[in-house]
Image (tube, rainbow, N blue to C red; front, top):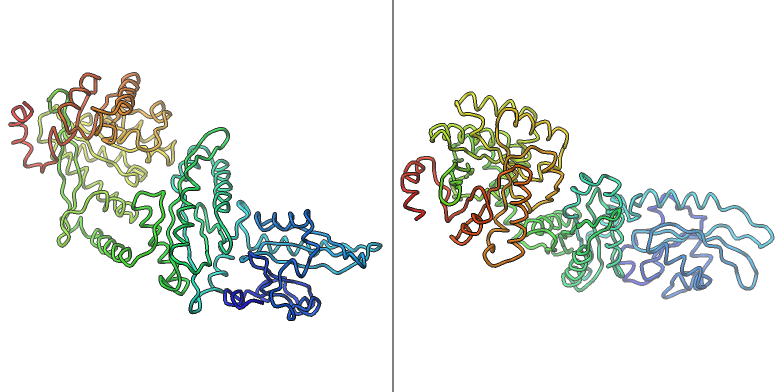
Length: 558
């Protein structure tokens, strides 16, 4: 056997597999079909020790025949075991070879030899190979499973001096909406196709695994690191650029990849996996659908994030949150209300963007308490405004899906003495992907109370028209992405014009976010947009500044 193969993992011997017996003919080969280990009987039978560079083709030259070779390649590519019968050219003795996929290549179990006149059944060998395959491979995709992944890392790490191993953690982007909207059957179909796309870009000494759900991994043995790993990671990302077709429907699922290289990023399992996880988090934070290689700076960012996460747990009690209000304007320049915007001033770091701390609060189960505080603050402030002004409050998915929302809203309105029709609750489309029946009940109950419901950031998530048909929205908010180049981009104009017409046709109002120029105001007014919001019309301000803003607003808009 070659020293390089021994270095990769001579410990991945037949003794580690449950099928191993000293009196059986068993051999293991790497992805180049070089022999990396075998049972004692196999070594004695085929004089393996006398071969300097033994390969599958040296041991079983009969497998070079076109049909047999094609069967071997099928097992290697798809992971499904095959039984192949071969015959000795001189003695006519026949042998049955059970070919199966392993972590590093393929394995062969040879059944007892038998003459052409007396063939014995090899069903037990077939059963054994099938059981091995089921124990080490994912049933749905055929990829190696988490068990084999863990065994592989355990056998390989720590890597010896001069060797390098790259670990790639892969998460599918936007996979959950497929299960939620098209069903689990469609989700399973996408996972199978995703596995095929991952396989399609793998080369020699590169193995893929399905860990769980939409989580995959690849282990790569290459010396030129991190260059080879980054090349493969980019190829994995690009493999997901084209849509998947499920039951005639095109769905887009991207891939985010985190890369870590041993020994530099860690030479033990937990170290290397943590580094790959941190790199994957960086890829998702940077916008998903991309690959990132671990660096120490990522670790610093993560540590800072954890510091913020700990601080967030006491921010509400310590009075670090406050609310600002941004005007809502009816064209051309008539104030109709304000949107309440949550802010966090950290005592050491300063202002923390909502895009940073709100996902933290949601994942840590803090958003319900924080959201209730915002609702109460906004309603108390709105109670001091002119009676026709409304206040808009954003609801996170954690708040919306928590039981008792309608009761909390009703109790808050009663406690502060605010009419229900002066409160507008804003939700995003992503909220509606969970518990659809309960969502409809919640929205209908809020509607009965008289509370207005707004669909925020329309057009940037999934934009299923069924939402507009089935849910009782009062307002659709057009995301600022479509407004920023409205004066010059015809596509944006077409989309905004369509949304306005669609909403009005369904009896809903339309609010445009991100208005920053007088030209945008003119265009939106001409198209019949009902309400505008943006820095040109008024920046977010503390509650104490609203009276002065209202006094000067007529002059400010001239």
